[in-house]
Length: 89
Image (cartoon, rainbow, N blue to C red):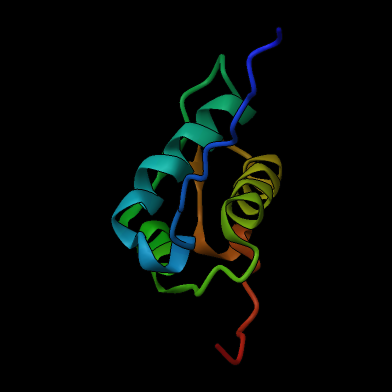
């Protein structure tokens, strides 16, 4: 007789409620986007990321960082590379 499998529900709060994780996640996404060259995310970049409401959650953060890394010409991402749009949240 097969064992019944029960689902497990894990409640993960939206990224806007976990601002303390944004810097860590952004650095991890930057490292993944360019693994063989160090990427610097300055304090202004981290501040801009932490102030954004992230309606798209982690997927939006990942896409934003990947785009910023591609737009950066050196090893440093600037706030202008983020292209964050103001939202009404």
